[in-house]
Amino acid sequence: MKITFIVPAIGKKPGQKYIGTWKMEPLTYAVLNSLTPKDCEVELFDDRIELIDYNTSTDAVVISVETYTAKRSYLIAEKFRARHIPVFLGGYHVTLCPEEAVHHCDSIVVGNAECVWAQVLEDLAHGDLKKRYQGGLGYTQMQPDRGLYAHKKYLPISLVETGRGCCHTCDFCAISSYYHKYVNRDIQHIVADIQRSPHRYHFLVDDNLMADISHAKALFRAMEPLKIKWAGQGTLTMARDPKLLKLMKKSGCELILIGFESLEAPNLKQMNKSFNVALGERDELVQRIHDAGIGIYATFVFGYDNDTPATIDQTVAFAKKHRFYTAAFNHLLPFPGTPLYQRLQNQDRLLYDKWWLAEDYQYGQLSFKPKCMTPEEVSQLCRQARKEFASLPSVLKRGMHSMQRSNPLMWGLFWAMNIRLGEEVDKKMNVPIGRNLDDLPK
Image 1 (cartoon, rainbow, N blue to C red):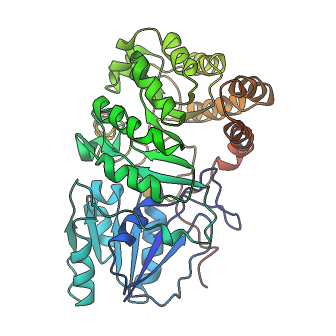
Image 2: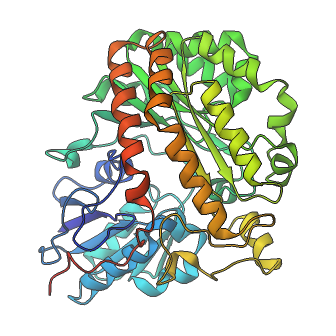
Image 3: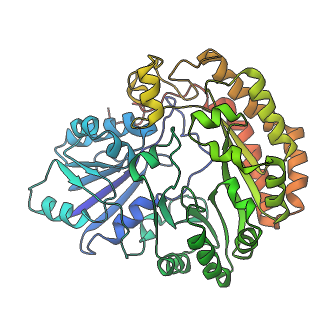
């Protein structure tokens, strides 16, 4: 029996390669690969870096679907189903929109697939597929089998799971809409995963590493002897704990992604992230992280009810003042299954019932009506914010600041990342998500 795993791309313009700075290894498929019997042949096509062979000889196709890739995933599934090859769809989008996804495949997997993967393969072998498989929340003790990545041109960074879910319930977050809580991964399994990795640099795949401080501290102590470098995602709350920052740095932390989201207290309250306001002075907390020798990847989102053009200007000024390692200035996007989506729908402010399936929806567009600005204005101001932050004077100032606290490799990565991000600002705008027939068989 042969299984084909496929990573769908967000979108491509006809005749153009996928545009994306981060071509990281798809961890989901390495986990499934480890649970697949060794007498079963597997293959991986990554739509972001290569063309899919729609004529491959296989017994089943498995696609993990994100909301951004839903339309393209359904198109890919359609091509294989036309050859009478069973298609399985899973991932967060399928979990949050099962009634939609089930019409585009032979079977859906809702939730984490680990606990039902053996049953899926057994039913496939016997030709007795169920329309829906219900996964769970827990982890498998099996280590990811990264053999699928051989000869793929991914960044030399290994993705390692440390936890799933989050202790917060931000209204825009699809992850918390499913998990409702934080689930730790066993520290021994994390360490073993890192030790098996072929790379020195790692990204700890956890939506909030600081969701369980005691677990985080124990993990960092266990990681210190490994002598690795890593990046991850956390919150500004970690700056309130000097001991935590020291443990992070000693364990190899070089960069932490922090979702500031907004500098406006009313916006933070609306997005159910008012804990950011209660932290006190942002400037001091940011400085503590930098003083610990840790860079910050700051993310901001615009389109909430109190946002104005002045709000965006102030945010860019804040990001430049602190000379963040890098930053993202994104427009708000209502994902299905979130309180945000439901609120905008109830207020009749959605421009699309399902923006991820709309034929004319393109990357960079808003899918709803903001309160204080037009959709087009928010989109354009986000673009301008990215260009200003990625301008040469901004990159030079931030680069010199980064050099003072980074090792040579991280400093080199700074230049590669920021210069490329600046080049891609315009390329990414107005790219249609999903639909693209130029690489399909005629």
